[in-house]
Image (cartoon, rainbow, N blue to C red; front, top):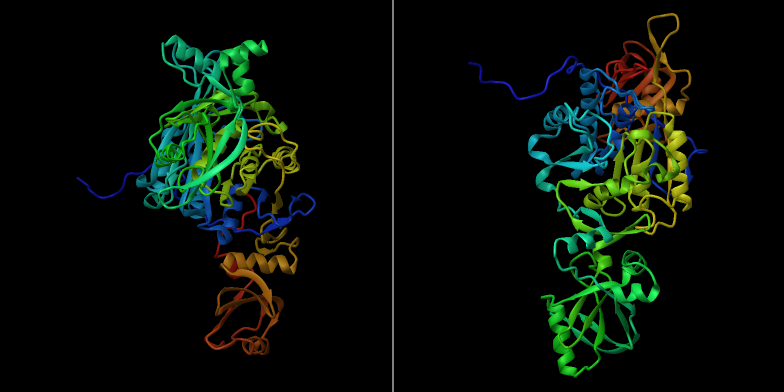
Length: 565
């Protein structure tokens, strides 16, 4: 019995893997928008070529990748060919996943949304590309209410209301702890649920007026850091029922109206509360309500001035409903830490309006992408989406002050992504997560087109030639990228791969004299790669100089076909 080999997924054409040409990116200044100092990139073109083009500058730099590729469901999306033969789909995905893995930072993660038609195959493929030990979780995402959900009859198949997200780390041992994801329940529904189940609902008091704030004195925490203590004169507090009766509104409306001022009190076991209780007793403070200000060293408020309220001699701490809730489309929702089931149904109600663009069934809510980005990144870290679609990931990353790269092949790069992002930058996008994160506008991006292939087939002869659309500068940048050199023209050199390795590219005739003039500009221990279109034959070259010919020596480096899948 054979005992060698490995567990892997196979399909027709799996090992047909030509090296994709790493093309240059051409900025369209008329389409770039906002702050010119921004590093954000919106790229129009095939994402396989774009991912190859990004390798040189971004390999190992992307902290979070979220992609929502076509699901290969047998139905056609308006903007994507989503009816690909299975083996082709797997080949397309593998090529892209390999390049995406290279772009991830060592502590980075990738999140891939998929449905149940391809989930199992994609999981095995990802195990192969990323390593089974780097699998984090498979998340089930509720995208629809079961009532009225299309897809599958009730006799042979259950109706679909969930999609799935496969999450992988680049290197699991280096993965930092996540910031927790949350589930959302509409507040009035939650209160009614507590009543129906006979549970105690404690968030029933409204601080209508915190009272006049009067500084009393200071104490210190265990590390000697200052805790300022304030008396609160004439505060006003009422129950939610009293407020609703006074205002002539329902309790549900009262929760919506006063949600940020609703609280419960608790005998929290914390060193800060203990110190405040001791200080209150030492000073003989009689005020019923006091507040403190200090700078926490841990937790979500670490490093900034934080205010807390305490009531009575026992210093019962105010716990605010706003700290465990959010307002979504004008409704107050309770948020709770969740596991691998994410309920996005509340965010699906107004999905078609998000970003003021419609994208059929391919669109995902901003809250879903926000949850992933906030879990895995900090401000100014890189986020990438190579199936950008309607621009959701880029819009969310902008609102969260992350740097981003978005790649979109279709016309929606112009019709969806750009208009949507322009509105976000101008502060004219009121949907999605805008209000929750208090987005006011700002930022910018550079718009790029992928250059055509460097080499093109001759119209009459079966040979390759330099693409006539290429300028000399484009030619030099493209060859630098193909050879792995950083393009930076200086003196006679066009780029470098190290402090002692340079490249020179020319369309002039190269002979011995030409070589000598270049050699004279090299320092001790430096070497030079020369690319040219015309050159003297049988030249004897110095040991530190290598000469290659265009296009002959380029053809061995990668595939220059103009169309790729």
